[in-house]
Image (cartoon, rainbow, N blue to C red):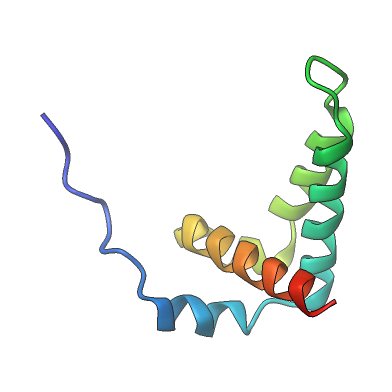
Length: 87
């Protein structure tokens, strides 16, 4: 028994439009989180990673998009990857 999706899938144009509104400081926080995640050893202390993720979740842009946070995180991921490829 499978459930229907809660929301229709987000179109690429919607994702791109949302990604263009993400502030650069939030992208910098996501890049920092990825760096911390890469250095965190399996089974090791994950407090720094927890704090980095918490800082992102408390950012005003993420809070403003809390009603559809999955789409907001996808847009953040896309914007961060775009930033990494440009650098």
